[in-house]
Length: 420
Image (cartoon, rainbow, N blue to C red; front, side, top):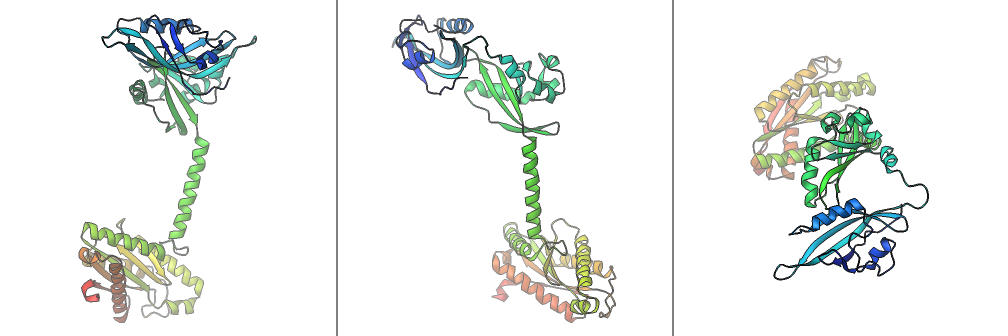
């Protein structure tokens, strides 16, 4: 294939399609001596089929402008060149046809010298991409081997079959292509999944010598390997991000994520209205538990407690966090103090139901105390101050629960005005 540029060249012809002026670039492209096209017909060196079609289109009583015509030239020295041509009629003030002016650029060139000419059917058939040509009726005019593999049918059974029998492209894709392409719009490549594999699908028009798009070419490039790697990378990044947000021992969200989630929920409360609550949780006499049973047992106790507390949070929006050491926190969006206290009681009972032995506890097993703090939308407008107040009030309620004998829930409401 000869490399060529997209540089355009212009020309003008009279009403009989005889060149009046022509850019020398076209003569060089067609391997003709400079100045030799002047006085010759526009269709000089043009493929006979294309020449006949173009003559018919321009011979009407009211010739119209043609855009994006694809024409072939058979050059004297053996090169076959394909160009894209646009042409418009020139008229006098009274409407008399004076001729035509055109613009053209090369879109392909093949060296036909020697005894062997390229066999384009073989190139098409063995291309690594799946290729097919479809007409306006959705009929497949040509398919290659890769396309037949995707369609899971013999290639000869697909030719003249409707695309519904192949499954790809869809009827909607083809209709969209024929709607967009004749108007000069281009269709962006799109990623599709077909039969469990990923493909990039491209569609482009195949204009004839008059610029009319009677068929389109559809190419499908298999990108399953790349997409598979991308998905694994995304999964690894999500896992890494989750590891950064979760406590390695208990598997619940960590303090960092608590701070972010609390700010987000307070901001949402300020926008949407309502109430929200948080609960501060402390494992009762946990230092004495560690002293009695050892740190490994202490770690196992925290992990079991976190699992039980998470299971007791039934609403998707309620979330458990490890706040630090033996302390946990619960965020309960759109929840009033009464409902949040009921949730806290359920969480407290879930820990008691584990019956984890604790020789230093008056009850003989591990228990928790919870302090609940409630915040309304008006107070949430204070933003960061509201977050701090929620934690302060919940902590105060927690100490009240512990001071009243532990294994208790205490609650209170935030008052930003009082805290100021």
